[in-house]
Amino acid sequence: AQSVTQLGSHVSVSEGALVLLRCNYSSSVPPYLFWYVQYPNQGLQLLLKYTTWATLVKGINGFEAEFKKSETSFHLTKPSAHMSDAAEYFCAVTLNTGNQFYFGTGTSLTVIP
Amino acid sequence: KAGVTQTPRYLIKTRGQQVTLSCSPISGHRSVSWYQQTPGQGLQFLFEYFSETQRNKGNFPGRFSGRQFSNSRSEMNVSTLELGDSALYLCASSPGWDSPGNTIYFGEGSWLTVV
Image 1 (cartoon, rainbow over the protein chains, first blue to last red):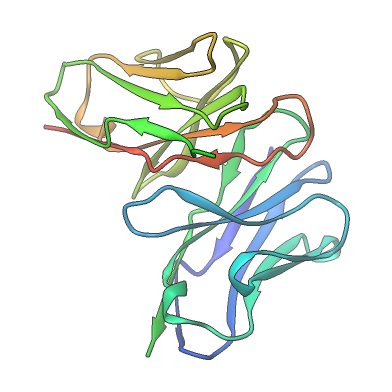
Image 2 (image 1 turned 30 degrees about the vertical axis):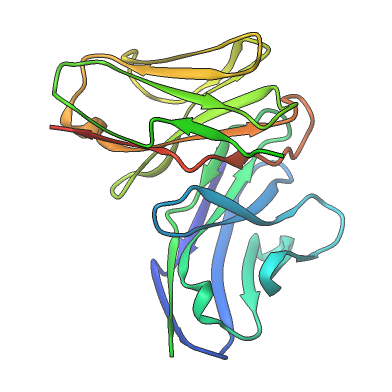
């Protein structure tokens, strides 16, 4: 069965500090991995996705994620946090076909001025 | 290009009633999937439609149903509402169904409160 685990339901960082949000996946086949962001009272917006090309994936707003098969991880990072990054972040995995996504429980990011 | 449009955005229903939510996908997208988001259960997959056929279904009771029209617009219906059905219902669209690693694009959701 497909699943993702996000470690840390709440993460706080200072403005300008490194952002690191953790995601580990469990999959019996090579997965397709995604990060989505959700701002208050809005739907989910795609940040980036991994589709077996490069292990380091760059997304929007300066975010990137590294796929590490040996660690079954797909952690999200950003070198310097901005106040506008405060939101809920979701890691997700999907099978080879179909659009049934399995989401992690989310990490709420707070940026302290 | 317009995004995924969901209506209504907010609604309040009484226990026992039924509700219908509507979703218009991005132009050209033929796959529509529905998700329920609650603080306790997180994001859970309800079902997915492609070419007017349900392709996948999540683990929800039969009170939850959906359909897709020939123009790819979709509706979901919840009958005999329970308090636990209070949630944000998110619709997502994608160009296809059978290509690996499709990205799904979300609407802003419909907030349902059951009282």
